[in-house]
Image 1 (spheres, helix red, strand yellow):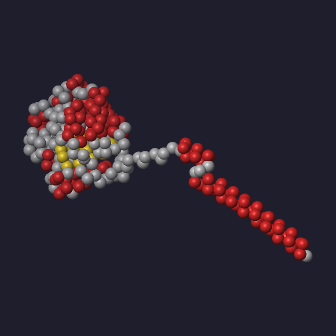
Image 2 (image 1 turned 90 degrees about the vertical axis):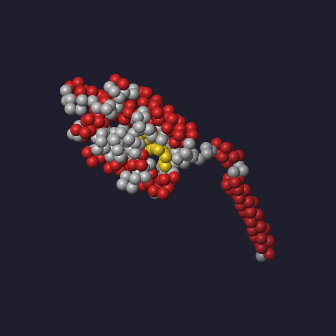
Image 3 (image 1 turned 90 degrees about the horizontal axis):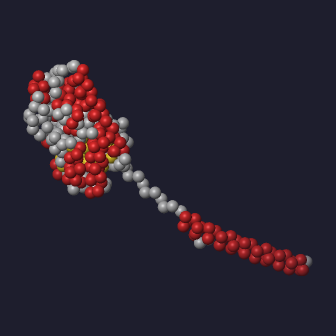
Length: 306
């Protein structure tokens, strides 16, 4: 009995020792696997790719606004005849009736100190790079763009800005902004439907008299002439505006912090209430307010509105 007990005890000790060795080896292997000390782990770590940087998201509450563009953004003919009225600008104006985009985003008090209007009456897309340089100097959270109407509104259709030139100018404007303000967001408005403005404005005798001073002659000259040649002229201007809007859409789509309005301004059915009582072409105060509302809805949307 004692011999059997000695053998049993020796067997148990042998089994326990073997188990401890096995467990110790397993523990070392597990340590190597989890700590990256094993050759295989070191190889996998070295070959792992860094996590990609998160895609920038659109900020629906930018803290400042700079505007570039043409007479529409300057509030031309909205307050008095043939005069700028930037206080009613859809983008940065202070007028309480308009409630500009800046006021809607920032509040009236902050908008007074954190919004800037560098648009110029008569400006074409070729003027936009210089305006963008001025806007970028403010380090704005958002830059609004409304330009292109004057590229189509020339003396004749033949003198309209070529589409390729328009594209090059807009690209240059975006490059200028990105060089100085890489984090600024950009909201791009489509060019308005000039043919609709002609069809609405030609009902106003006063508007037609002002048109004779040279406002958008390519579209508005001889407003009551419905002959084939005049109709063809207006159609060519309209086609150019459509082409410009395609450019705005395409160039903007290549910039991760740019949002095009999806054709909202071009599609808007302006009527006499939204047009200047002096020229029946530029937006009135009501028209400026409608532009502000269109922009605000799109700037504050989580996803682009097509």
